[in-house]
View: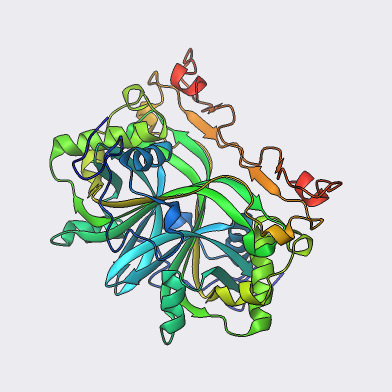
Length: 227
Length: 227
């Protein structure tokens, strides 16, 4: 495990900044790299925020993590990718990943909540111009959704490669926020006749549905059967 | 169904604006109110974007729809709610809701995709100061997560009511974006030996886990058994 001079924790931490310290519920925040990475690695859809003409824009998009870098991609014609490509020194973004784990139903309406794990990344996104880094990011984007899939698909040809833009975002100003556990009702509400508890979300995938034009003899690969 | 002078469609549509017409994949966009409402009504967690000190911020939060209005809530101490309360004439926001329906695994890396349905709302959020509207919004926020739940919980008392801020966002500048269906590979790739198809996401909830301090004789309510 990585060490840190500042903290005795078993893993390194991201520095807390004015933007990553919440104004409330600070006990739910975490800057632990292992916690942040595990939340990011469990997902593949993020919500990417940027500012256009002074107003916020939030779009869902795929992402991947490679070490201390995140990558998102899209058509070279899409707005954030064009903006980041043109912008110097890059495009200010906020990239957020959220997993909803369960519904917390308290006896009081006020203490209703959601069990969740989220990561918020603040930073500047840069257009990836190095072809090797771009190719690595494109493979990682496919593997983030289904590990092992990039090796079992046709890589982008020159035209597809040129039509795709990739943005890099460093994991520098990052925090996680987590709510776990049960109901947090007030002691005086415990005797109320309302059902209280947690409804966990069901996770996972239904059985894969093969394309009708599958080449004859193409079996379901192991990495999909294991999903 | 609602009518519209401008369009012959069976339901009303939101007007397309510069912000809601995508620069690409315009065929995936929808301005149909029924489509937008059904996507919003299926969820309860949104990603709310706003601008702070010139930089974007994207936070996950609960939302509800009441007619042509969305509501979000939070502590009166949280940043966006404080900013909207102070700001005049309100806080510019972008509120995005995304459902991921399946993984689309093409033979080519380039045509990998996600089946999804998303709604993006641009507008100005206003602090709800009318107590009746606020109370209605708080009930709706609970019922958005579990329909029928607000009637089976203790309503907010005066202190809790005062500690909660509610923001209103009109559904005026809104669009949906959808990707459904199967794999979109190039004809020349169909004979490749890679498995291709769609992996649908499993939806729903695990059995509810009751709070250990449940009042004796409190049965699981029907609206939870039906989830």
